[in-house]
Image (cartoon, rainbow, N blue to C red; front, side, top):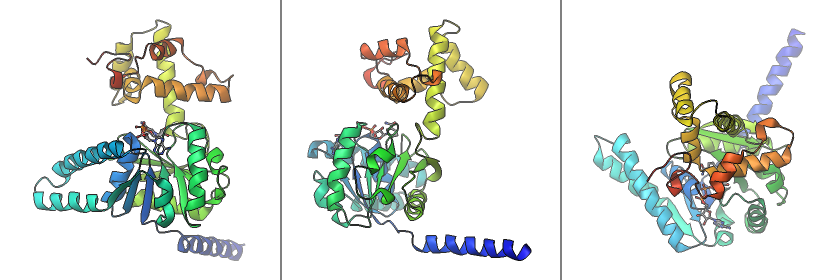
Length: 313
Ligand SMILES: NC(=O)c1ccc[n+]([C@@H]2O[C@H](COP(=O)([O-])OP(=O)(O)OC[C@H]3O[C@@H](n4cnc5c(N)ncnc54)[C@H](O)[C@@H]3O)[C@@H](O)[C@H]2O)c1
């Protein structure tokens, strides 16, 4: 028995070693979508020595993304290189040297190890993109989506590389937030999964893994919590101000649920909850909220529009 156990342990560790040996070392990355998330991912990938091509629909958008990255890097060096301004300037220079932009994804993926998609949260649009890129990217290239609420499996099925497809869910703002959820579908190979975990670590993040389930870990817990706060307020049990104070001072959360909803965007939150509700209509945690729907209809979407649950003007 002792021998069998030892033998098993040795076999398991040698399997792990073989899988590790086969992992893909990701050096060249293409990021599609230069918005809030894509620009952040491009920044941390370039800052950690990867060569990055950032893709979006127009040069104008990409100029804005690059400017945002430069400003964010300046904030980073103020903290990280406070007493070494020359090293800070060198860090910015090297990071920007690692970064190029393009408006033509198909023409830049030919030499990429990893494609990270961070475009609009729409399955049809994402599938169309992945289907096209599947034809142009080399065989070894891994595809990953940064989606918050869509099924990775459905995107993987739009391609012929289901085993080289996974989720890389970064958090906003990317340069600050340490977490990445690495999502493994039933078809994602161990090699792909481990390569994505290694990449997440290489860009300075702490990866956790989750199956391809609605909301993965963080949003699956966070969104129903925020919706419960809205329902508590809708019933008139407590004011939104008191609920926010209670969760900050009583639970130690950095923001209250209404502050967080305004920060995330009420449209985004509504979109997520509506999607889950259609998947599981009888799950009370995924029930839509009349108040949230009303605010979205009135275009009160949170901080970005100057008003959500609170006013910011
Ligand atoms: N905002 C968040 O807090 C957050 C957090 C985690 C994950 N996400 C996910 O990240 C993704 C992007 O979100 P965001 O907040 O950065 O959105 P965003 O609107 O800021 O940026 C999306 C960008 O994609 C570009 N784009 C759209 N279609 C394109 C195409 N076919 N080809 C190239 N570029 C295209 C747009 O021009 C835009 O610049 C979504 O899937 C979202 O669910 C968002």
